[in-house]
Image (cartoon, rainbow, N blue to C red; front, top):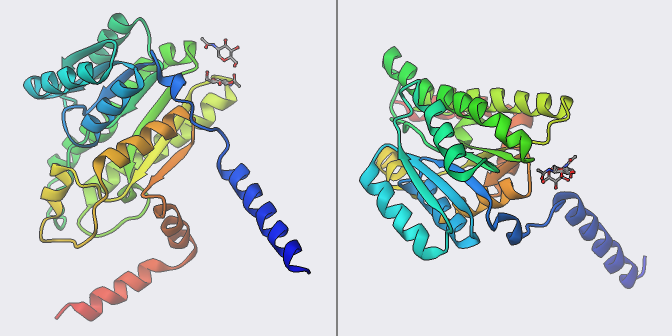
Length: 286
Ligand SMILES: *[C@@H]1O[C@H](CO)[C@@H](O)[C@H](O)[C@H]1NC(C)=O
Ligand SMILES: *[C@@H]1O[C@H](CO)[C@@H](O)[C@H](O)[C@H]1NC(C)=O
């Protein structure tokens, strides 16, 4: 092949790949006036998402446990351009809260276009020591409350061709040591919401489900739990927040952030990597 042929061939391949992966371009206009219910909005990635949504001109209901902190986030959102922001403090370990929060949001905003589920009870990053009650509590906060919030919001999301955005973690795709309970809650999210996505499509309901698989992000909670235990580079929270919002707005099924996690995940599925890790433990223990 002549050099020019090779260049054309490579360009064609690149264009094809781009067309394949870049299905829907992001249109910032689509978020102007969008009605968003965002959980875990007082700190970390949730707080950063609130600021991005505010800049895009969305209308929001913010929820988290700490009212005073939420108040500050709300005030900053208003200065950044959000048209309407409301807040409702809620503790997602209480089974009655999800329904209340969704009702409040629907009443204040007149419906929902986005339900962004982001709150977590954090990982303890320690070896399993038998605390079943902690696992039960974490399952309530990280999983059952997500199911209840989504269930309460589905009717309004269906009416509005809305989107469900579920923030998860690489610990919900790949099991590693020191994440037993946390990993379990995140795998549960993948199982539930990936199955629900099929059912919505089967029923002709136009609600997208976006599962977000995040690596280590430099939030206070995450950095606190891994301090002195793992040596990984953390990604900036504002970038992670933007990746989630764009994934939701373009109705992607899964968002990996940082993007290379997707490659790591496919390699993990293909290769017997568990054995590699396990022989490393044998090698490194005394
Ligand atoms: C939902 O999407 C369908 C198909 O694009 C469209 O006909 C309908 O008007 C949309 N409904 C709303 C409320 O946006
Ligand atoms: C689903 O809703 C989105 C957002 O409103 C719209 O762009 C799309 O055309 C709808 N798809 C179907 C199949 O109705």
